[in-house]
Amino acid sequence: MTTLQVVLIVGFLKIFNIEKAESRTSNKLVSEKHKLHYHYETFNYTTLAFTHAESPTWDPDLNTLYWVDVLNQNVHALEYTTKQHRLKHIGKGEVNIVLPIANSMRLLIGVQSSVYLLDWDEPRPSSLRFMAALDLGSPDNILNEGKADVKGRFWAGTKGPQHGDTVLPDQAALYSLEQPHFEPKVQLKPVSISNGIVWSLNNSILYYIDSATRTIDAFDFDARKGRISKRRTILDISKYNFMKTTPEPIPDGMTIDRDGCLWVALMFGGAVIRVDPNQRKVVAKISLPVSRVTSVVWVGDALEELVVTTSRRNMDAKELEREPYSGNLFILNKLGTGGVPSYKLIFNDSDIY
Ligand SMILES: *[C@@H]1O[C@H](CO)[C@@H](O)[C@H](O)[C@H]1NC(C)=O
Ligand SMILES: *[C@@H]1O[C@H](CO)[C@@H](O)[C@H](O)[C@H]1NC(C)=O
Ligand SMILES: *[C@@H]1O[C@H](CO)[C@@H](O)[C@H](O)[C@H]1NC(C)=O
Image 1: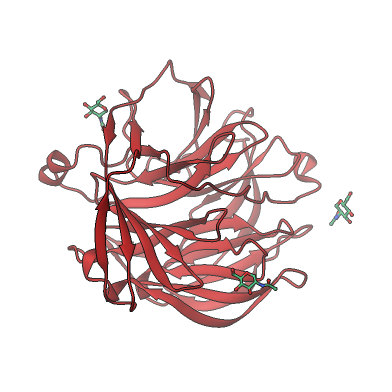
Image 2: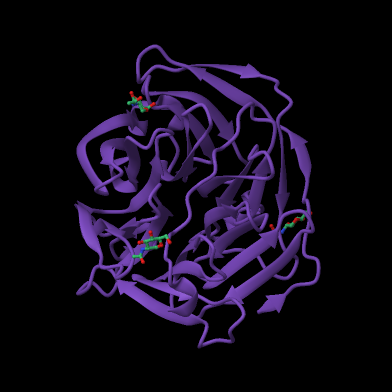
């Protein structure tokens, strides 16, 4: 474990505009600029820039934000009040997921296409305990997104082999895993790039993103059986003109707010959008000064700050000069809503496993 001496710190503070999107049909957008008192802070590290920050997750019991830096293979923890930062280098391949476990001192992490328990206080390499392997027979696949459901099961989605910004299509799957054996159960196959994964406030719907489809989809969710059915598309972002960028934006990480709306990171799109899944439309778009926006999570006592992770993966020097904050975390405030507590993994024996 490395404890960096005070790292960073609020890089800058700026008033930005939220564009309130009003659309009558799904592909027409009248966007009005409202000068709301919305601002963001960004922070970075003088000694360490994140290459590809992902999987932000909030543990309200420890008042701690976790995230991973995928390519540098690090898990980060930021105690939110003191801003004490710790990082754990894993060094066994891409680290894509970090997830708190209920009543446990350990964390679940995803490394390449495997699931491990991470014991923060153990020195490497004894800090990892193997739990499960996904997509066996596809060694270049990666565990890309993972969340816990209301019953504490782990929902884990993979993606196929990636070269540059391109991912081989239809090589991956979505699984659920639960105690005591965490045997992967295929829920959806094939998929290209598993993302999103969040439940409606009443847990009757799973919202899911296969980034390659550029859509946000929904399934009926049976919480008791841990089953999904009846896939339908609730939003196709390729139909929105205001999201035309090169490369084309794809939906990435996603969370839900207390009003039941979805907040979706737009990779390559330089924005986070708020989507009303019942009306099937974009209701707001927040632009950031970086294109590669990877994921979102609500943090803080009131869950009213939205942390946005971003990336500088595959950017050349010119692009980085244009978007120097790429890879930073952003904290958005005063968005007029907030989150709901997310679920933790349930694993009774995690501390003695
Ligand atoms: C970190 O923030 C400072 C502003 O406080 C900025 O000048 C610098 O470019 C940032 N570094 C990175 C790697 O984003
Ligand atoms: C986990 O603990 C709960 C409550 O103590 C218990 O009801 C449940 O059966 C346990 N599950 C397993 C798989 O051990
Ligand atoms: C649960 O929430 C979804 C999404 O808001 C809604 O469509 C559905 O009608 C709700 N189900 C019940 C039983 O209230």
